[in-house]
Length: 222
Image (tube, rainbow, N blue to C red; front, top):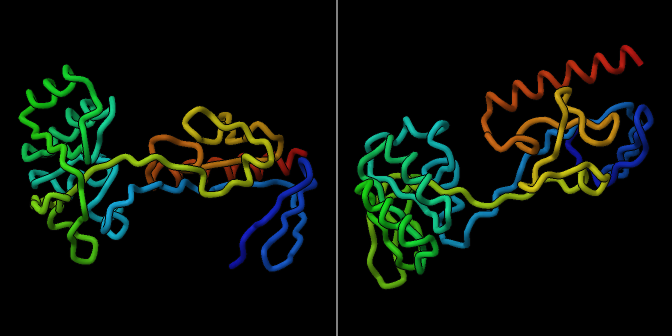
């Protein structure tokens, strides 16, 4: 259905879904497969490149940019780990902190020991063609050519209804589910990125398949 859910009330085997078009739909079970919303930094061009050449995971995208000039946009205590990880995919690696370095001097030394360059200039914009990154421009007027940029932006739940219903959320902002993909509310299930830190299409498909089977089994046995 091409509609948006605005409210969800009720209890197991007796839920009511309310939509933006005014529909009220009765249902026995609920499955949230609503994903996450990435909160990208306010840098011109980054949104157009997201998922194409500005990427978050080497296991998803690393083969596409292996050996090419690559950057990491990061400036916290995860930067060293990220640098170690991505340096396995390319030796032409630069960390862009987008301002004064925030990680400690020991971590900075370890990053440089990997032959990774650190640039602490403020980023003005990202140049690209149809999402394919070509260079990063800095506020001082200089730029650096680059083919790919890794970053791990913060995220939020794409749909606020699970939390509004009272579904338990963990410290990372993910919906907590048990081995049957059921949330803390009986009859309400969740699957995919909204529940899982390791985000991938394969993982989401597997979780959705399992959730569907568990929901079906629960309804049959009720």
